[in-house]
Length: 194
Image: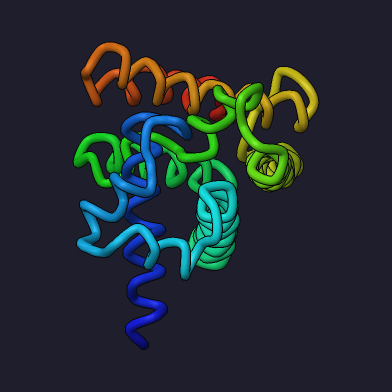
């Protein structure tokens, strides 16, 4: 890895942490420069503006999420287990604070104030995640592995909203366990009753 990509990656990682902690307007280039240990002009060398930085961050976040979901598709064939793995991933991230909140979920709450370039990336993440969840729901219903109360699309949207809401509740209560308390009954409800 070259120094340029390493510095760029450090800037993105720092911005991600700062966004999760305080939102889009909760940080400045001065904050990033201080934490990464570089001067502000160095950040501008990599990312001309904050809009460019956050757009790149969300774009990479989307790519990472898509790669993670694709890996899950390859390694976990059962649709019900895919949903359990997805929830377990977030439960672990919230518990150990490695990723206590989905960057796109947090930024979605700020859509009215986000620059359009960033908002487009956030919306694209939601569409992509909803599409994946819909395909999991459809496959699970077809295989008899999931019991749906509505269409696969409606179940997918409800699942996504519940997971994001559980993140918010865990943060609001200052209790990582709240995530599982909220998300696990959703998984139980989707499990077929025999």
